[in-house]
Image 1 (cartoon, rainbow, N blue to C red):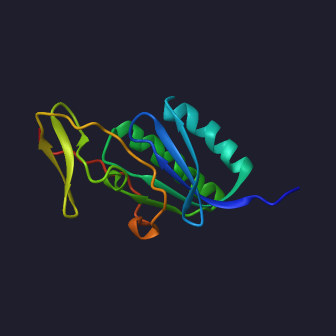
Image 2: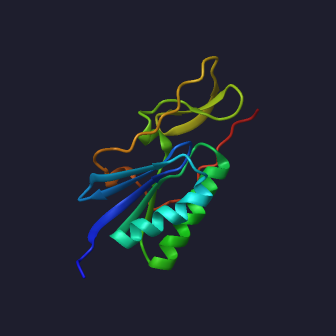
Image 3: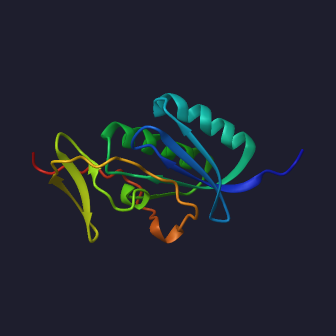
Length: 154
């Protein structure tokens, strides 16, 4: 039996498609994306990944974004973290979209000004696109992994 490669996993499940990055020595080794519902596809994808790789750390985008998507990602990864004793880290979604506005509700978007996340009304909705980084910068992630459920006064 051959030895599995040690990797870190990054999940972005804030919009469609969900994206999983597999990183070896901080560098993107493999990308997986799916247009399926995260609650249905994550268990299947993660089983395949864990069968193939030795996962050492888990990372995810903890918001802002779809409340349900954030909740599913958090509960799924937190459960794996506890059950398999793998550390979990998080950062906000702006790390993955070059600090662009993220749709909230109606014409409201989440924006990040300095280190504060707020909502602003925008007439033109930006195209929502999250990108897996080629190099995973550990310093951008935190052990505070609670979801960012942020919404301003409507």
